[in-house]
Length: 425
Image 1 (cartoon, rainbow, N blue to C red):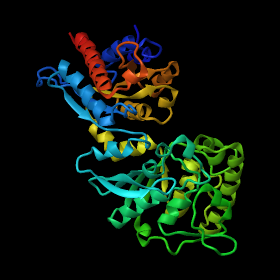
Image 2 (image 1 turned 90 degrees about the vertical axis):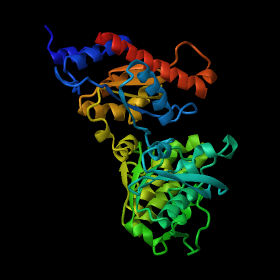
Image 3 (image 1 turned 120 degrees about the horizontal axis):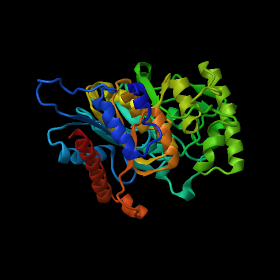
Image 4 (image 1 turned 180 degrees about the horizontal axis):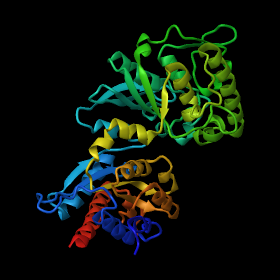
């Protein structure tokens, strides 16, 4: 007869339906921690946590959770549903955390990567933490394909958002730096915060695109906003690239931002030269520092000038949302994202949620619009079973349609919990 450890191990390698059945009986047999009451106690009330990342272009994190909750309540009418909006530090992070009780959105005007004025926003949480995404002002989605040029784009608008929050009283920051259109080493952001850059002739630089990196000979720190001395920055970052070199910001990421091979070489040489100026003026070497190359070198600017801590994106979001406390006593956690693939197991929301749930012995079910074969890596990250929300083959434009996606999410959730209810009988 198999022991519980062997039984639990059998979850690996099964079809999703079989995995869910095994997962359920694992709960019933006590392999997982459960809040199920003992005999004679009051009637048991199932607790399910929905922590689903946004389905890009279809549903926000909270909308996905709302739809999945409807499916649950069609089956278990008295179930307790806990919805925790999540994101991996990239697109959707502000909206996810702004959905918390006591949080609010702040809308401002800032520069886009090419200096045009646009509307941007950040969130302020109940504890006063300012949460922002650099992509809101300096992101690649703000530009057309013909406008992409990391020699010209800058992070000045990101600095403006930070400056606004500082002037409004914020001193604790969580900044997602994914999705950038820039390779300026953070010069633009720093300039917006009062730092000044000079060339070898002592002339102050007034343009901050990547083409100016090699021109920086000295940096004046004294003009920086005094509020920065009291500020604490956590940067949500999912890459460990160094500042320059073959694995650095320019070589790895600049091509997708519009850089030609010639531009890549110029940008990399500029980053290496700029790193020397940074070290000479701050005493910190960022050239080979893991994560310094994130967002075109913006990670390095945060490290050297703002003394930031780099943190995995999903881990930072889960910490800020009070995830560990909210999942206490849960019977199941439902997570997911628009496409479940190998990337989902590498610092994305499903992986982060599942690892935290595993520490508390809570089984996890993942839902996605599509599931690739290599998504099976999620089973190694403690996801118990995965299901597509699409009920049949459909065109991409139909699958990502908001109303269709909401309906499909609700239906998939309902069917999963109907199976669980059937197994309870």
